[in-house]
Image 1 (cartoon, rainbow, N blue to C red):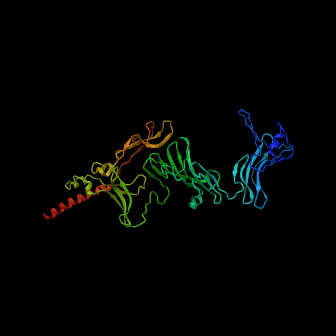
Image 2 (image 1 turned 45 degrees about the vertical axis):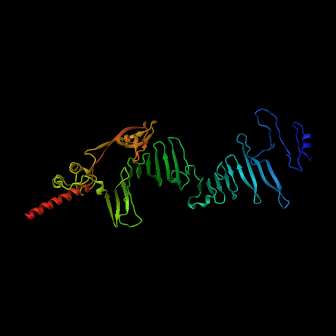
Image 3 (image 1 turned 135 degrees about the vertical axis):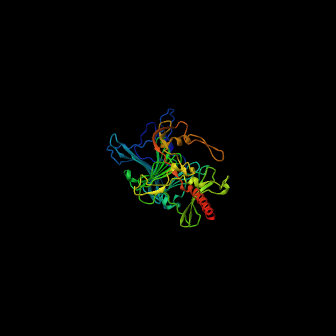
Length: 445
């Protein structure tokens, strides 16, 4: 039978053909069309490939659709095929497989394999690329077969740093020039990036970065433990979870702790750290002078007014009560010289910080849903963070904490006084000058 029209005339409704049938044409007309004129919502027309085996078994091959043509050596070649297979023929647990193969370099290779447990592209590990195109990017998702690299918005992820080219995100940026990745989760959950050197168990990871939405805190983990925290106020805790201050550093090892700052050159006056006030004016710095550290505070004459050189320093100095003592936390045999802060506060008040017997209440901050936002925060800090502020340019900045955040007292801690003994140096110097004048006057008498 050589013409589709002849076959159509011979077939009636429900006809069955038991032998192989070939429909051939010498032109590009459709050789087989299945048409349904049914107007309901059920599926039609249907093409059914049915293997009615009397002894079905696992791994039986089912129907297959092949696209076959000739090569330039007059050989018949299957260039592509879609097939199916029984994976499990057991009643109640049946599993099936469908696959798509195509000719690659003279060999029919798996391009897509769908089984009961997975869907695999390129199951035979051929050097093939996988590319998903979006509206604006030809390589919205791209797997580079030859290099085993993955690109998002990038057609050549293998061209980047060899140490970090497994996944390259590069889509040219949005309207704001941003390229990035977002990890979104519920307000009481945690978004994480982990760095592992194992495959199972809690010890599989050695480092991590994660954000706790419940208390708005960023965590940095190293060697399997928390190393640094940043809270919603921008306060940082290193080696501790106490991040109520701008920067808190805790080291318990018998080694160099705290902060080490090293300049690349030995230039005299090279600044390690600069301090600025609210208006942006520099008010002090820590710098180097060859092999020594210099601690500087602002003292320029242009910053001062009402300058007086005539005041009685000796009378004030005589009110100071230098003492010898040891710190409670130190060895009792370690005795040092110094002052008690409250005994200096009335004489040189600029040398003292804090109040005698000062304390402050600490508490827990919670949002409107009762989630803990911050712990061990003073009520003073909490009150300040609920206020709008105005920057030096007059711009209003929103409060750090919303108005529905609450603070509940949990503890009270001592706030100890401090002393800057360098503030006593001008008084000492002036006293020496006064005594020198007296000695000179006595010697001249």
